[in-house]
Each structure stands twice: as structure tokens, then as C-alpha cells.
Figure (spheres, helix red, strand yellow):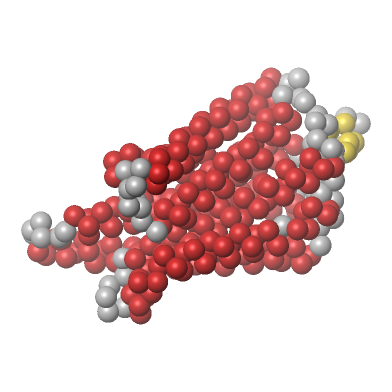
Length: 292
């Protein structure tokens, strides 16, 4: 076993373990606050599902990558590969959808009373429940081809006659699947950019008002909304940053150079957001008792 593989395995193990523990701790805080009768904001329904998606990504993607890095191959059969890939791809899709919903509904909740979005404020709880259900159904339907085309491990031989063990192979996925996943991702990222730009403008206007008034007349609720918006913008920024880095790596692997180290870098990048996002949410959760 190469020393580089051991280092990669240790890094993935550390990244995965910390990410799962912090996500689980954050999820437990939300559940305890709910069971203790605290009044939670509607957005917390999205957050709890985002945390569950993060945990699923870390378990379904990180665990096989760790075993692969430590030289343990052929640990999954066809059924295992299908389930692992299905859970990973579905959780990844849910992650981008829930992050998009988080930005969208926060933009609605802080919109001025004279804006067109303000008309939706009273319907936010209903819209969130419907949107979350739609995201689950959509991503389950989109990922059905994974259950059909993913196969068990295979051996590929490169030009130097050395065998590279791949713990699962995607087989040949139909073009419709690629189009659907790409369309989902583009629409979600585009909506995130639009809503985040809108929230940045509102925050800028609020900052100007504070400077002009030079007083503390703004309510604590208004200040809490501002801090919550800043948290969601930071969360969205982290997601988009690693999403684009991961996309660039996938393009490089697809069209330029397909190798195991490239696949490892791609795996690490795909695990960065689910591992880091709870650290953005945790300080506010501890301070405000789950009231984002």
C-alpha cells in the first residue's frame, strides 16, 4: 500500500468522522428542541432534512472511499453498489435542492411588505412542506436509472499493466439521466444566485438605514433576521464554491485524464460541504436554541 494512499485514507476518515459527528449533534439539537416544545421556525424543517442529506452523503460516499484508500477492494456486490450509489446520488440531489429552498424561503421571509414576494409570507409553512415533499419525489424519480445501470466492482488494466480496483462502476447511463441531473443542478444554482443577490441587496439597504438613523430602534427580531440571512448566505457560498470545484474536477476526469487520484480529489470535494456546513449552523443553533 502506498504511503500517499494511507494519507488520503486518514484524511478521508478524519473528514468523514468529524462531519458525521457534528451533523448528528446538530440534528439531535433540533430534535431535542422540538420534543421540548420550543417554537421552531418553518425553515428548520428544511435544515433538519439538509442535515440528514449531509449525513447520508458522508456515509454513502465517504465510507467506500475510505476503504478504497486503505486498499480494501471488492467489498460490495451489485446490490450493495446499487444501494450505495442510489443513496449517495439522491442525498447529493437533496442537498442542492434543500440549500436552494433555504435561500428562496429566507428571501421571502425578509422581503419588504411592498414587494411581490411578501404575499407569500403567510403561506411559508405550507409552501415549505409541499416543496420538501416535491424535492424528495423528484430526486427519487431522477435517480431510478442508478438502480438499473450501476454494477459491482470491476478491474481495469492501464497501459503499464497494473490493475486498478474500482469498488463500483456506473456502467452506461442514459442521456436523459444526465440531462435531468444537469437541469436540476443548473436550475437550483441559478435560483440560489438570484435569491442570494436579492438578499444581499436587502442587507445593504438595511445597513444604509442603520447608518442613517444612528439609533438602536431596530427590533431584535429584525436583527435576528439579518444574522440568519448572513448565515444562509455563507452556507450558500460554501456550497456553490465546492460545487463548482467538484464540477471542474468531474469535467477534467471526463474529458482529459481519468485516474484514481483525480477520483479521490473529486470525492474529497464532494464531501467538503456536508462536512463543513454544520460548523456554519452550529454557533447560531447553540446561541438561539435552534431558532435560525
